[in-house]
Image 1 (cartoon, rainbow, N blue to C red):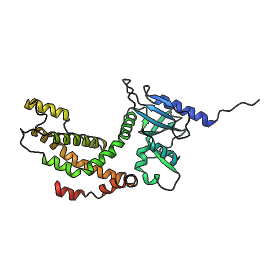
Image 2 (spheres, helix red, strand yellow):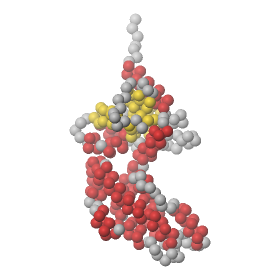
Image 3 (cartoon, rainbow, N blue to C red):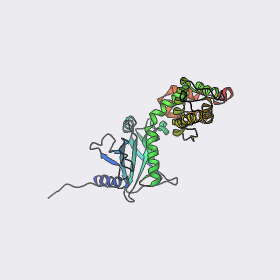
Image 4 (tube, one colour):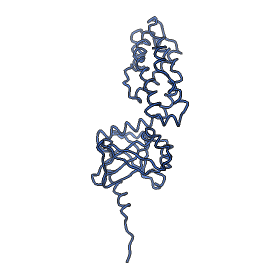
Length: 301
């Protein structure tokens, strides 16, 4: 009498799911996808420790091995993923993570798919049919460090669309923004700031704060709500939201950070992720590439 046999492949798949469920935080919601042929095994909702379900969703492809071979630099590579699958991942509206389960040690590692593709875009668009991903043993689900890094990669990827918009905004208006920063410092301190300049300040502050945080530049500019409150306490003037001396204080803090943002934005687009931006957003890449920082510095700084 013959019976169906459970294959090693099915056993490993089930085992990798056990590792995933054990290593991920208990509050996270794992929604398994029944049809996995398109490269997504599950969607995970990242619920906060306090139980807040805020719609922070990511997609996951789960791989496994009984023996993970780590290189001396604490990385291991995973090859053979079809570029057609990766194209699908890149088109998804949520961050995508490739997770790799060590079935023997019961550990789970992750890499941020879209970030790695952008960092290695030349390899992604070459003639080969598959792409190679790298895992680092520090990026482990279930450890304190790994959790912080997972959330960092998640929110960084979630903000990527905004990054593109702000990179374009600050580049197009670079000269006007810097003239605003310089031209609005040191005015008669008791005069009020008109509505148009307040609107410019609010937008510029928001743009610079986002880019500074994304580009890992230390943000040491006073929060605008705090600045407005301080102004009110100083002047006791309900008819004026902002005075020139407060504007000067804000812009003096913003000036060096603005310069650093311009420099690092150019580095990101034309060096760190050169192949990605050159092939996906040529106008943005080209204008940043031709932005002569030294000439700009001599002219304005």
